[in-house]
Amino acid sequence: MEDVKKTYDQLLAEYNELQMQLDEANDTIDAIRTGQVDALIVNDGEGHQLYTLKTADQTYRVFIEKMNEGAVTINREGLILYNNSRFAAMVGMPLEKTIGLHFSDFIAEESRNVYDEVIANAWEEDCKEEIYLINTDGHTVPCFISCNTLELDEGVALSLILTDLTKLKETENQLKIKNLQLAAAHLATEKLNNELEDTVKHRTNELFVSREHFKYLANNIPQMTWTNLPNGEVDYFNQQWYTYTGLSAEDTRKYGWEKTIHPDDLQLTMDRFKASLKSGQIFEVENRYKRGSDGAYRWHLNRAIPLRDEQDEIAFWVGTATDIEDQKKEMDRKDEFIGIASHELKTPLTSLKGYLQLISSYKKDDMPGSVKQYVERANSAVNKLQRLINDLLDVSKIQAGKLEYAFTKVNLTDLVKTAVENAAHIYPEYNFIIRDGHDYLINGNAERLEQVLNNLIGNAVKYSPKNKDVIIQTTAENGFVRVAVTDYGIGLSDEQKDRIFERFYRVEDKKHMTSGLGMGLYISAEIINYHNGEIGVESESGKGSTFYFELPLV
Ligand code: ADP
Image 1 (cartoon, protein in one colour):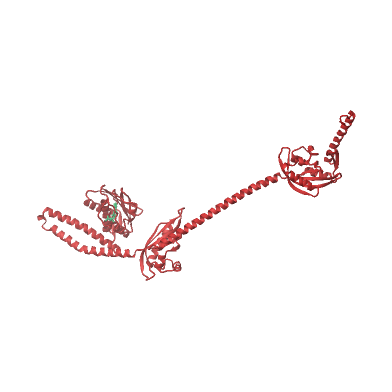
Image 2 (cartoon, protein in one colour):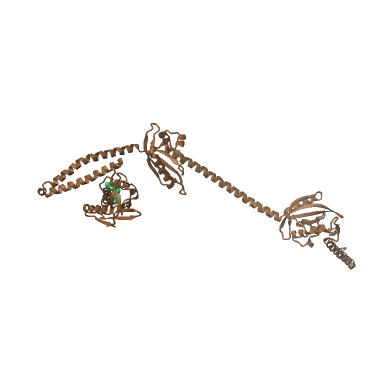
């Protein structure tokens, strides 16, 4: 009510006073900012107060204005007496508006308690803490606040230095994220490692089990068995090896094969084995191993097959040696029997032939037609028998290494012609076609080569019951002449092709039953080998075959 009663003059005076004070205050702030004075005036609710900065000088002020930290000075009531432009930027206000405000207005809600505590302490001793400011946008700014008391002429004030921690926090956060990612990666790696360890354990166990299975199997078969590394080094022998050879593991390592294989078979065995290691093809050889108990050499069939990994690389070789001594002896006995039997058969056969000749020449004109026919048939049967006996004798000779004969210059073209003419006579229903007719000369035995040709042509007829065409072609290339006999008969499978040159081998075919003993091709191969030539076959089951031999030209 008193105020209402104030006179115009009084009010005017008061207004002027206030205006003056305001001007003064602004001047003071300007003066302080520009360094003209070291004091400032603040209205703290109980009238205006003037604060003078005791030790401030121009250098410090510029320094404070320019520094990267927020700098604020507050009085006991918490009013801002001074702040630099960095602080104003931190709270998002123009510089001239912040002075005189309550500093606590810029403290974020979550930091209030900490702030109150810090400020309460700060008057007693210097202290530091982390707090959040809030700017005019409502954003919080993480800060590190450092408080020191400041002696002013008018009393003690607090100097607050605020370091913006936004960047630091961001980095810290990123670091935290990175750390989390690192921890996750670490966990994943550890998991993978564990899984890998499990797999390795599992595989090792599997390997152990399969190795044990293999050993169990290997120790319970009658053959000697071993395994080789890809370079040929033996890394395992089964029990039978040690039992048969009488060697210890140490001896085996020291002497290798040398002490066990017959000296005559060692070179061949080693050559074949080395060739297999190089080519990766199955190793096979027959040789004699010394039995430890009595020093006797027994024949064995050796075989080693390569086992390949997923990359098709040879992982190791598994070898076996099977005792074939008894079979070999049986074969020898059979050969001996065949030799004796064919010899024994030859004598009566020769007389039979002689008597047949006598009969056919005896009073030829008086002989009834039917008897003449019987004599002819008997002659043909005797010839067949003779061929068989000759074959049997040849086989025995080959076995004994005694099939030997003289070589002369032979005109192969003529030989082919003669053989084909004979065949045309014996098999009139067949159509023999000769291709090419140069005079190819070779060194050889005409009789034996004719035997080969007769055999090939005879087979072409025998194994081609339907198609009656047989082609005999002679060609020369690279110093070799090649004679090929082609038929369009039953043909051969790949497996059969590999074996038909073996002694007594015949294809078991219920559809095409033919007579024979499986000797013809075996003898033919021996004859061609004796001529330093090569014999072979190209064939497809059901389509026909081409049997050929190649001989060096003169
Ligand atoms: P054989 O004819 O007396 O049985 P060979 O040694 O002459 O004996 O022949 C061996 C085997 O080869 C025969 O049993 C037959 O199965 C096969 N063979 C030979 N020549 C032919 C051919 N031209 N076509 C099909 N198979 C053949």
